[in-house]
Every structure is written in C-alpha cells, then in structure tokens.
Amino acid sequence: MDAERSCSGDTPRRRATDGFTVKARIRTGRLADQGWPQERRACSVVVETISMVLTKRNKIAGAVAVAVLAVGGIAYATLGAGDSAKSQSAGGHGPGPGGPGGPGGGRGPGGPGGMVTEVAAVEAAPKTFNVKVEALGTLEPRERVVLTANAADRVTGVFFEDGQRVAKGKTLMTLVSDQENAELDSSRATLANTKLVYERNQRLAENDAIAQLELERTKSAYEAALANVSAVQARLRDRVLTAPFSGVLGFRQVSTGAYVSPGQAVATLIDDSQMRLEFGVPSIYVTDLKAGLAISATTKDIIGRTFTGTLTSIDNAIDPTTLAVKVRATLPNQDGALRAGTSMTVTLSSKPRTSLSIPEISVIAEGSKTFVYVVDSTRQPAVVAKTEVVLGTRERGTVEVVNGIKSGDLVVTDGVLKVRPGAPVRVTGATPVGEGGAAKIASGDGMSSKADLKQ
Figure 1 (cartoon, rainbow, N blue to C red):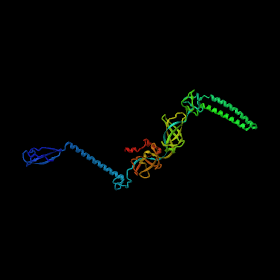
Figure 2: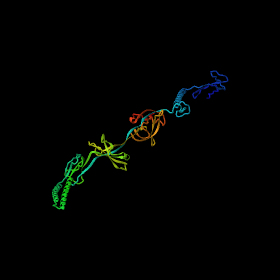
Figure 3: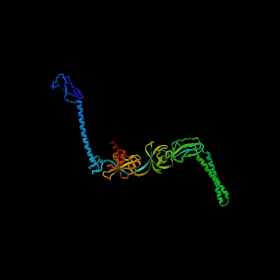
Figure 4: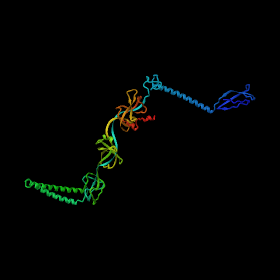
C-alpha cells in the first residue's frame, strides 16, 4: 500500500484504504521533531510505521471464524477417536487390510465381522386352510307352479285368497260340472249292469252251460263300462283345481262367474319351506366342489343374520362366456324369512387341509419368486439365510407355505429390511403362528417391519 507523498512540506494527510490507516513521517535532510517542520523543499517520504487497525465489523467476523475453527477441531478429534474404537471392536484385534470387520482390521481372533442386528421371528407352525369362494346368488323356492284351468267353462267357486298358505290337495277353484255328473251317473249304471251279466256268465261257464265266446263278450262289455266311468271321473277332476303341494299362493287372478279357458292362469303357488340358492363358481374350483359342502349366505334385506345350508347339485357344463359352473344349494326356511328373488352373498368353504403358515409380512417378493429370512440358531452368533418359498392360500395376515421351509423354522418378521443373507442376528422374540403371532402382527399389536421404515 503506497503512502501519500507531500513534497511541499505540507502536513501529510491520512488516507483510509480498505480499513487501514497509513501514517507517514517526512524527513527533510535531517530528522524532524514531532512537530512536523513545514519548510518547502524536495523531500523523500519514508514509511516509519504502519499500523493496521481493524474496524468493528472485521473484529466480530474474526472472532466468529476463530470460534468455528475451534469447534470443528474438537469435533474432528472426537469423531476420529470414536471411529478408531469402533474399528477395533468390530474388526477384531488382528492387524491387516480392511475387510468385513471394518477398516484397519480383518477377521482376526475377535470373531466374525459385522454388527449383530436385533430381529423378531415367528416359528412356522401347521394351520388348517380352506378354499373359500365368495359369489352372488339369487334365491328361488323349492317348488314353483303357475296354476291354470284345465277346461273351458264358467267358474262356480274360488276358495282361496291372496297370499294364503294352503296344504296339498286343498280345493282352490271349481267349474260348472252338471253334464259330467249326469254322465257319471249313467256310466255307473251301465257298469253295474255289465258286471252282473259277466258274473252270471262266469258261473254258467263253470258248468259248461255257455259258450266260451259269450263269456269273453260279456267280459269286454264290463271292462268298457268300467273305463267309461274312469273317463267321466277324469273330466270331473279337470273341473276342480286343487293345490299340488303345500305352499303359499300368490295373487288371485280369477273370480266366481268368470269364463276361463284351458291354460289360463289362476294363481302362483310356491313351496318356501326350503329355498334354492343358485350361483356361479369359477371353473378353477370345480375339483373342490362336491354335494354336501356347507355354505353360509347373507343378504342386505335381513341385517345381522347368516343363513346356512348345503350344496346339493352341480351343473354338468361350464359356461364358456363366464368360465363358471352353476351350483345349487338348499337353505332351510321354516320361519319364512327368506323370499324368492332375494339376492344373497354366498361363502363356500371346501377342501380343508393342514399346511405350514407364516405371517404375510415376512414374505419378500422379487419378481415372480418369494423369499423369507430363516434364522440359523446352530451358529454363534445366529445368522439368517434367504430361502425361497412356494406360497398357497392367503388369509388375513397369514399365508400358507407349500414348500421351502419346515415346521419349527424361525422366520424373521421384524427387521426384514435391515438384514442380509449370512448376517449375524440376535432374536429378541419368537412366537409360533399358532399362538397368535401372525394375528397380532396383522392387527397391528405385534412387531412389524414398518418400524424399520421409520428408522
């Protein structure tokens, strides 16, 4: 930094440059006293002293910088000492190049490298699994028939009301039958006469007093008269409508005095003592279906009630459009709560089997394959092995294991995201699936790998 020069003997000026003040004294051939002589002559400026004086802001900045450097040095020294201690603890005491045990130490006399991870495990245990199929079905009555008139004539009587429950054989409607009743009386009289002639000729034939041909003729006349009576009685039955089975009648569609034709509807009769439930089951479950399987069904029309029944029949073909086979189940309905046409949700359980089960949360999916970590407790410390498994049916929080592990194996549930194949672990809790381990994990009461995600 150049000092400002005054060759005229004037009092040197003070100039502040970048926070510094420069003081200069002038020599004029002889040393001047502190009064700074004012002769005007050639002179040379000699910088006697330079004093750097910091401003207030520079003083504060300098103090902060010194404090930061001091704290950083202390932290660096502390972390360096901690890393050295961890390396010696994890890597053993033997010297050598860095390895699994940490920098500066290999697998020395101290034991296998790597930190021990705490995990929770569940013991694989047998459990009963069922193939459960859910479907929608529609209720139909056990029997349904539309009652119709069998003859053309006028109605003489209607003997039922809308919605009436009737027994089998009850007379529901009659038609005019005067002519048929007269024909019945005539045919019965003819039948009685031919019967007497035939019986008399039988006695005469025993004594050979009548030809065999005459006996056969009277026998034919008797049989014809008997058939005629049966025909008239049949026509009379057609004029009386009766209930073919016990059940409930629908709306009445005829009235007394009306003229009806053959085939005209009179009422609908259903047997609701048992209800038929028809629904479709995917074809992949056909082999699991058989008559007698138990079903349960619910409907929104009757809240809080579950109806049970049995599978009664299976259709003989698969629908090519839906790829489902129709099945029919029977539900008891003694109290008449179920009505035809009701939509129901059906649950069908079949093919119970016992297999190993593990918590679903312990399964690791990699592409099309699934794996679990199995704890090998025969080694000290225990290590985990990544094992491929084949899964079957899934239930709430539990999954069936078809192949890959055996009963009693400890499967890691909590800590799945922290371990690697061959890593040392310490099991903090082992609960068999049968004792509620899987259920607790599924309901959120047990340990879960979600804790790993929070760490």
